[in-house]
Image 1 (spheres, rainbow, N blue to C red):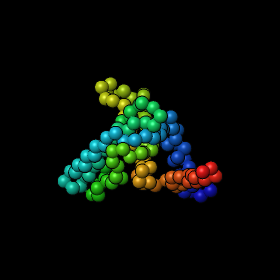
Image 2: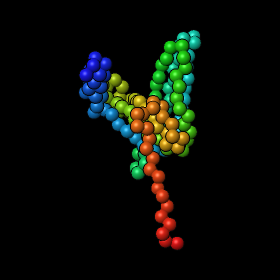
Image 3: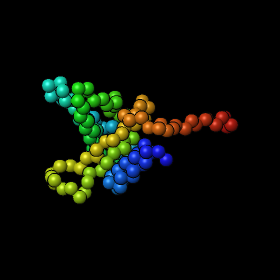
Image 4: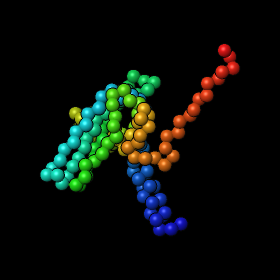
Length: 140
């Protein structure tokens, strides 16, 4: 095993040790989406996207936030509209840190997979695997 592999392995193991219990995944339909883009003198650009998602097979509604800040370039986000079916991968809020009790608990988005348009925010190695179902025409 080379230096790069050891470094990446130690990085991933430390990351999972730190955030592993907070990882979560949601699937559902978009109820609302709000996107804000801001810029400071054209040097620092940031985007904040707030998604309200109704989870499948439950009445629960989850609020998810994506925040990204970049220097000189505008951060990008995939096109999402109301009613699209999504899979969101993110982090639950840290229970140990209690800064404000008034703030709602949001899920911070790490990746979004749009099942309607088949696009990802961050491309995944295997990608989305969809099963093709063949119609059974034996009985007419």
